[in-house]
Length: 387
Ligand SMILES: Nc1ncnc2c1ncn2[C@@H]1O[C@H](COP(=O)(O)OP(=O)(O)OP(=O)(O)O)[C@@H](O)[C@H]1O
Ligand SMILES: [Mg+2]
Image 1 (tube, rainbow, N blue to C red):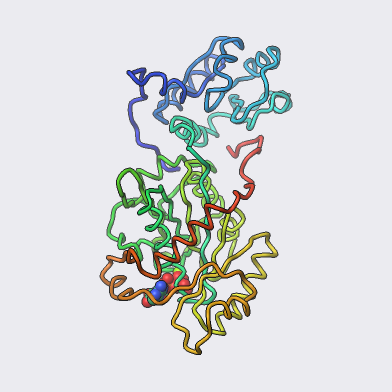
Image 2 (cartoon, rainbow, N blue to C red):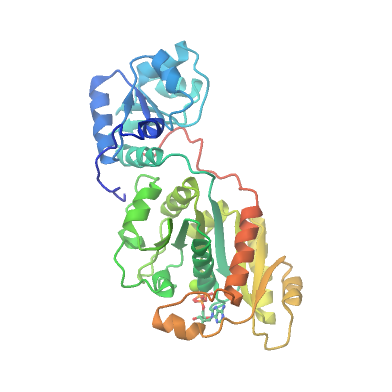
């Protein structure tokens, strides 16, 4: 698990109303369980609001970001006929009491968790709740190459930096264990911060806030690009961890960009299944068009709708639309080679030129991503948390 920054739980200062609205509510009468919950809340730098009865719970029912109930709380809410809402979590001390799962389902709870096993999950859920709702749900982009060296990693970083430039919070995730590390492309390989092998995401959930503070980042004004890079150790990140990180970015309303390897394995499919848009990078060559076609077939079989970005130069004089037609994939953008790219990558100061080909194609991709309806994702609605 990535530990969130320890800090003092916010009190009721002049902005007390805002803080109050973000406080998760606990309707829990089991004193021992409440003690445990308060300790977990401290670890999440979160101030829990305790309510004594269902009438008090009703007052915060629609505004609280998260509701925690013990078995008596579930019964109280059921008796008060509180309407279903999102983010109700039923908490018990291990072992789970009989019938609790059924009662939780009847009031429309999202999950049943038992402590102490689910503590890491709960720390992250509370930390997320304190961040408040994102103004909109984030979008997820996956990028892959039609062949080795197609320019997928460079493009993923270019899209990330272009989003940052536009003022969007962005999460860049390196899913290619053999790709040399995306930190190298960003010129961040000497920067402190966690890489994939340091991540312990046993809880199946991570708070965006803990990613923001523990990973290498680039900032522009109030916006931040956060990078989760590989570490040149060749091991693919676990699929559950990839899912947890993607969903953290999405919940926080960020642009989430995943750089995928050529060989699609479980972690890549986890990302593709969650992607709102998948882009295939292909050099303007006939062989790349043929492999893009095969790749697109695999992706569409899985329910994705890939689009193509063609990178010049074209040794045989093929146009981008001809490449797209022969690959059978809609053309999203075509770009000339980025001037001086190899040199800037070597120096570690890569940045797409403001009016250059990469920026142009990255903007087109971000526009398409923004216009694509969010794909329903599969992480929600699971009544039992991994604990
Ligand atoms: N837009 C571009 N313009 C010019 N050259 C490029 C561009 N993108 C990539 N290249 C060149 O291609 C090389 C490989 O790029 P990149 O690492 O992004 O490819 P990839 O598809 O991620 O490869 P891999 O198969 O290793 O994952 C870069 O080092 C650079 O020299
Ligand atoms: Mg790559």
